Every structure is written in C-alpha cells, then in structure tokens.
Image (cartoon, rainbow over all chains, first blue to last red; front, side):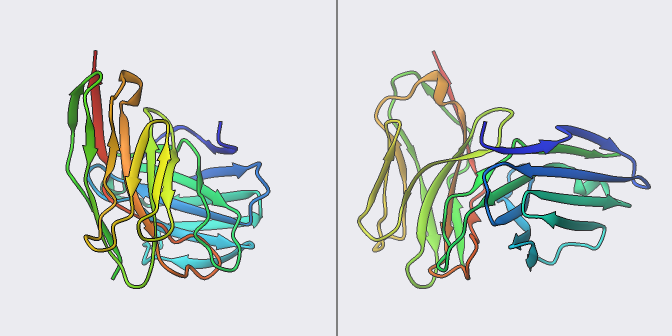
Amino acid sequence: ETGVTQTPRHLVMGMTNKKSLKCEQHLGHNAMYWYKQSAKKPLELMFVYSLEERVENNSVPSRFSPECPNSSHLFLHLHTLQPEDSALYLCASSQEGRTGGEKLFFGSGTQLSVL
Amino acid sequence: GNSVTQMEGPVTLSEEAFLTINCTYTATGYPSLFWYVQYPGEGLQLLLKATKADDKGSNKGFEATYRKETTSFHLEKGSVQVSDSAVYFCALSPSFSGGYNKLIFGAGTRLAVHP
C-alpha cells in the first residue's frame, strides 16, 4: 500500500462514452501527477498539479481533462476517446520542495480499454 | 533534450543468476538517476537512486552506479529470485525541476526469473 489509491482498477468504454478516473492520496503531498503507460513505450507524463494548480500539460489531447479540487484528490475526465488511448493510467504524488526531484509514490493504475 | 534508453526485454533468468539491466541517459547539467520497479498488478515503486556522479544506489540486493563519463546507470543484482520478476524502469530527474518532480522514464525492461 503506497498511500495512493486509484479507482476504478479496470474500465472498458466506448468511444462516445464519458467517464472519469479518480485518484486519492493520503500522504499529505503537495504535487500530483497523471502518467500514461503503454506497452513498450516510456511512461508519458500527462499532467502535473503543484499546490492544486496545473503546472504541466504535455501536449495532451483535449479529450483528456484533468481536475484537482484539493491537494488530496485528482481526476482525469475522459470523453470521445480513441482506441489508441487504451493504456494503464497511473497517478502519482510527491512532496516537493524548491529544487524538486523527490520520490514519487504511485497508485496501482486504471487499466483502460477503449472499444 | 533529456531522455532515457533501456535495454529491451524480456530478460529471462534462472534463480540465482546474475542480473544486469542496461540504462543510458541524455541530459544537460547534473540529473538525479533512479530505478523504479513495477510488480504485477501494482504501480511503480522507487527501488534506488543516485544524485551525483560516482554515487552508488542500493536496495534489496540491487545496485546501480551513476557513471557520468559513460552516461550510464546500469542495474545489477548478484543473485536473482523468483520474487524479483517485475518490470524495471530507469528514470532521470533534470537538474532543476522547478518545485515538482519531472521524472523522465525509459520504456521499462521486463524481468522473468524461473526456479
């Protein structure tokens, strides 16, 4: 148990559906992250929230919409996805200082399949 | 730009064999280097790290030495166990991440250890 909980663990959705992924951290951290893990590709950093403000958006398509209502919760809203969006979506958190580079704590991920 | 390259897997070994997983990086300045491990059905966990040249990170029998002259951070273990079967990710954190952790990951190397 890393202190980062993601739900659901598995999600199957059609291309016209709207769904949301949820992440909750119980560690008191001040930064939260969404990563995409696809087979045989490096983990892709999608979004970063630091002190509840989005500080990084790595050219992610608008069909992915993040939300960070408070420092403990992070959502990823999904709509009109494509089959190539099927992947494992990982949430992570960290306690960052002025120089960064601190340890990331990951959740177990949501395995998403888009039909 | 910054990038991480790992050897492709899968790596298949017998129990008690010696393990090496190669990792090289490209970065400006003086990044920190990490190995993360992902056990089946789980998120990534930090295995070890090194923050400056010639540092050796170690944990659970695994070791990696930060080699600036060869820009490498190879992971080694003298005697692997079945329980070490997992996916191993090499990663770097740039010299200054601006207050949050901008880890850049390799594609991961799957290790399978047989009795």
